[in-house]
Image (cartoon, rainbow, N blue to C red; front, side, top):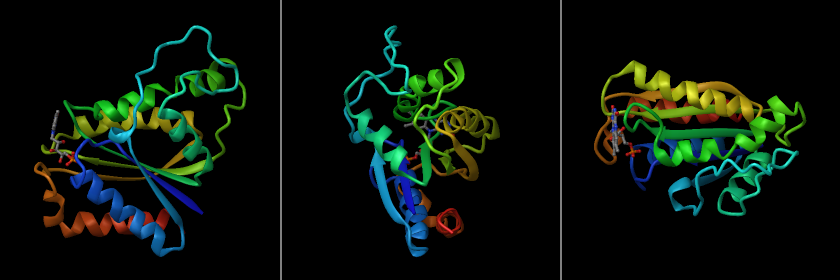
Length: 187
Ligand SMILES: Cc1cc2nc3c(=O)[nH]c(=O)nc-3n(C[C@H](O)[C@H](O)[C@H](O)COP(=O)(O)O)c2cc1C
């Protein structure tokens, strides 16, 4: 099976990056083929609300997002990971999600097959504070994204009180949970 990790943090070697690698390591331990996309490295624009939208769920803008659409379509499970920025997802993560408006429209307005098969998914989130409402906020947006790409929201891992780069390495419990999550989603 193919497990795709999507990293919404701009910090390479940061908390989300480390956690996502652990999840993917867990998935690989169960024989999964793993792949990771770092949104901050892609060149893509925010949704332009194109009036001339396609009818099959695809996006008209030919930029870095095309790779994301393709890789999600190829995956059997998606792990979406973002830090909390100002009480919500990172800008990179939200910008990616908005670019699925084409898929949302095909599914809910046109009531057509939007090209995404049924897959499993998990959400990983980190915050410096211990604000439950921030995590719930990010989760609500993520769930909306997952349902659009026909992904079943199966697992979540929320890490609180994690602020500085690679702080997560001092929390073995969270790293173990990340590995286990990856192993479970690939089983
Ligand atoms: C722009 C920005 C906004 C942030 N906003 C919040 C916030 O609203 N609540 C919070 O608990 N942490 C906030 N943080 C802290 C990050 O969530 C935290 O440092 C996290 O560990 C970063 O993960 P990363 O290393 O994967 O990027 C913010 C950090 C940045 C850079």
